[in-house]
Image (cartoon, rainbow, N blue to C red; front, side, top):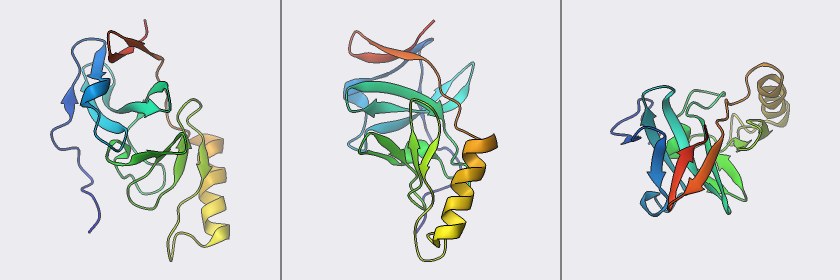
Length: 133
């Protein structure tokens, strides 16, 4: 069964403080609701914090329900991977249908041309991920 399309009970940011690193799930990423930017996918890629838009450019899955693998944010539905520092899709969707190489590469090319993930500057402070001012 695919994860739900709608965000359900995201963590809630406290001003610019997004989430404590210790509150991140084992996947390394969480959905965090903010007053200014809506719901973001927030987490750690290795020792680097990140915050990016929460919607996969392929079929609109919630990226905050995905996981961090090899320093990239992986979509929970079709495993497209994103560079969290640039918002670029580094590998297209996978699977029986969506993993067809020309289709997957086409989605990746389109996404990187006109629809990269929005990235937000963040920093680690006091054991938490904060939006940088």
